[in-house]
Length: 358
View 1 (cartoon, rainbow, N blue to C red):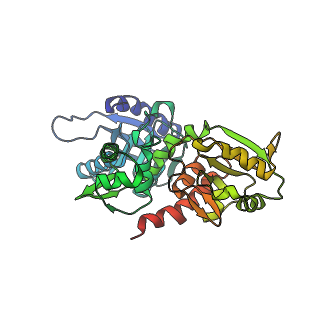
View 2 (view 1 turned 45 degrees about the vertical axis):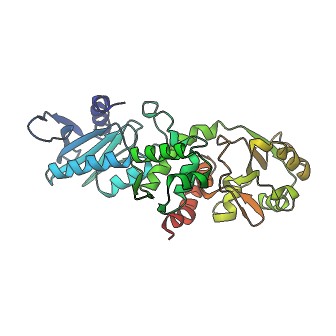
């Protein structure tokens, strides 16, 4: 949707959100031709009788750079008694948290909203984008291209040229150049004299999770039962297999997370196997004496959406191969059974320290 379309429907949506909370809205006509004015101005009468003047900016692009520009405009040209309001198609979780901290009211088409004043609070979270807010797949999140993000997101700023970077991640220089250009357009990359620095990394992660969630849910899986008293015992049995040394597989979800930053109890062990070595699945099944699960399963082999990059930068931890911390975060963020809790631990204990490393 373009900005005029967002403004056209956003006025009604904002009014509905406030009306549901018992507030009354009166839109004020402004003349944008005389000087800079916000996209819209409204007077809101809160349930307790307080009246607030609000300046509203409607954004079709809810990424970091355009939102920061909109906020700068609102604060530069509006009085100190005017409440800034941002409305967009979909505001990601890190952006929503930032706007809350700065006491900026916001709403989006997905249903997220935040309005706060003395004796008045509306704060609603919606996990997924609405159908209206769906965007085409971003090229930087595509399978092979995602190697660029996987490399940059797990490191602090890099002093590296395009050709050298392409050699490190196994992409062509043109693919790397296009990917870097796209990240700049999205407002996530700053570069100066070959120094590449990702900014607003959590916003970028949030956008990636939104892209990945429906694709993760469509991944195929094979479910097996292995005679083991616990998931931990099953991991020990995997460790003793000769196939454990094969680089064509990797643990993910709670089983993988338990080896790098365990936080929750789990009953199923999930793993990926490279599509280029599918016979490894039957070898694992045979070595573990596993049988197809008719009911409860404790071993699940996932068919990766990221066929060419799911094992990028996987590593051996305590004798078992585990997908990268970034892949763990992506998978757990999309997993229903306490995945979000464990993903937050991976973010806090693994990703943020990697970004801050010298």
